[in-house]
Length: 101
Image 1: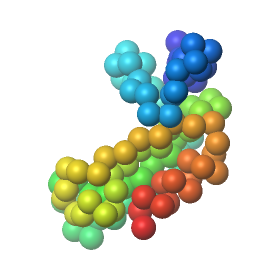
Image 2: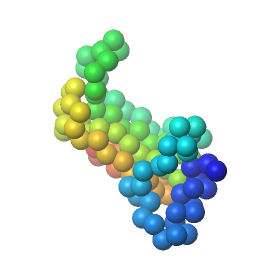
Image 3: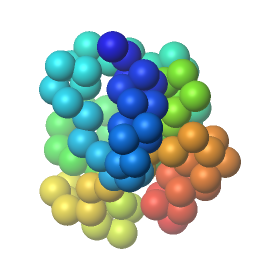
């Protein structure tokens, strides 16, 4: 079962999937059909291995999985992690962009 099918099943079960945690067996093997949006705030440079604020939107079938770390949390912070799952591409991208402001 892929990500899109699993989410469709959860919706049929009347589960709110907007913040749902994907099961490990699905999350481990998932490969996005497309990365729709990605932005990272990394003033340190590519060699820095610490946490940096980012926002990513990936498409899985007709679902968009968004995740990231708020820019407001600051550079190298472990706080501010967020996630959103939706069928609305515009909502996904606008949410990701807003989290990077």
